[in-house]
Length: 319
Image (cartoon, rainbow, N blue to C red; front, side, top):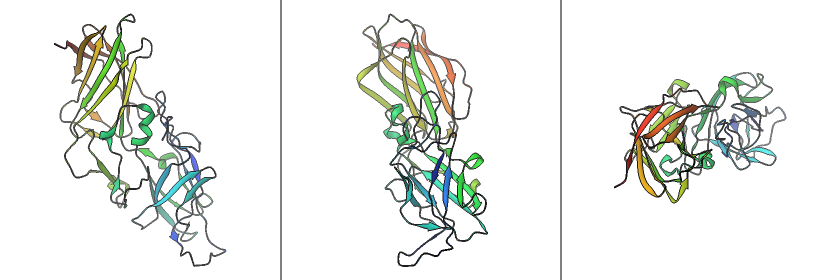
């Protein structure tokens, strides 16, 4: 996943439903399967997220996991220069019936089964938007038959791949252009926001979901900058985080450590929205002022819209 987040529209030359023995001769009547997948526009490339529109597509080397009907282990598909290639040849079981297919991204080296698919480790994030594709997780279902779309399994429209995580982007701006402001650390605290999880496909779509894996809950993500990041007058400084979808019992706490004209300060707030909804992209714009840290803007593009209130935060000089 790079940087554009327009999700995918790709045609994968899939073959599906029953795996063939390598020594078994191919039948001239085999129903070869292809696959279409999209989220917003028809592009063949890797999943990427753009800070402006949060769109996603794919690029060479990306891998998806694809579950055949009744199979617990996924078939891996890799995007190459000539399109998508599966690790094992697959064909439709027949040309008459409808079958249900499930798929997810990313497909990694970790062992995965239909009821336990390892998800990215959110605690390793550094807030860099260019790395967002490493942490995003997408899932899709589709019931279809060979005759519905000329042999293609189409993950498009209502059946398109969807974001499972919630996305949070924060841009920090300074109040006065002549001031020199550098951010040295940001911390976001919230119960289980960054815990490691597994995804599972249920018997029906209602049974799909996430389960926290073993180990303690990861309630805090701290990002320290070895070289403090400057808050540029026009664009400010931004960091982006992927979070587990959840509704917290109490509001999360955001804390920022920085220097203004060489004097260290901290600014924090507990007024961020406590609801982190799957597929929602919350974009905050905060302004550092002498009185505190104020959220002055919000925008969403590409993901579901979620209006946020203006938030003022007290600023405290570091003693």
